[in-house]
Image (cartoon, rainbow, N blue to C red):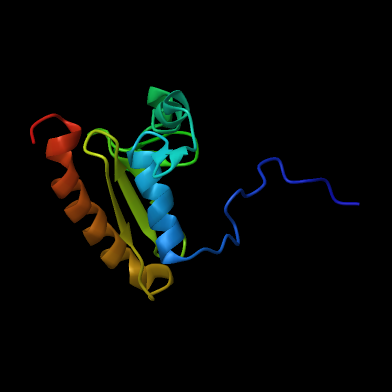
Length: 134
């Protein structure tokens, strides 16, 4: 019998709708609040969006200058989010309460320029709010 994986994939095979992923991002950007109530404690969202890497773990080709929170990348400007393996990218800014979502139909290496361009544009858009320069 094969042993269980040491780090099972929490998101591998996850399927959702654009509306639900964006609603999730908006809830994170609002510090855990969603119309109708609170879904996550604000402290939980802060922990999710806090870089937990050591200095020695920074600089990977995948994360570049970003760190890693609880299940998501964390940028130096304070934005956080997720880029999925199939090209979906979500960027949240809890300072400005904004979530930006990219979905596209390219897969693999072909999607890389699209996702990187989106992340750069979203970062430029959200950075002033995240750093208090709005």
